[in-house]
Image (tube, rainbow, N blue to C red; front, side, top):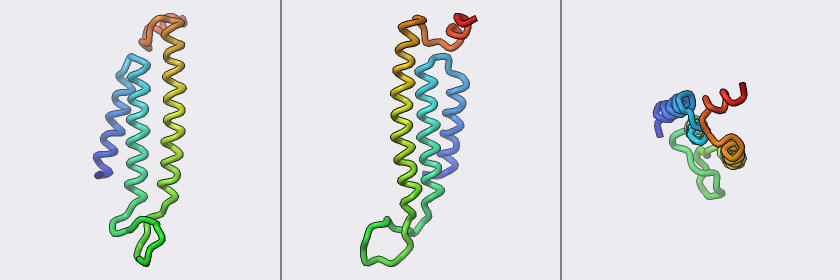
Length: 109
């Protein structure tokens, strides 16, 4: 995937995050930003003509496995944070009766 397209998806996620009034939509936009940043990082870590780092008779260029391992860790942490934030949204809805940012801020004042 082209890094420019991935950067555009990052910007679309940030735009959605800024314009959403619902907590769940905000969480989805954060997931879009996280996933596109992971794709962008993997695009920059990979270079053309390289092979996968598996033991073979090939002695050519190999892709570094460290960025891939870091991004797997980022995906797992992102899934845990998403699950936690959705559970907090459920608790907020049960307590306040709404998931609208503006109404929640007005209730706190």
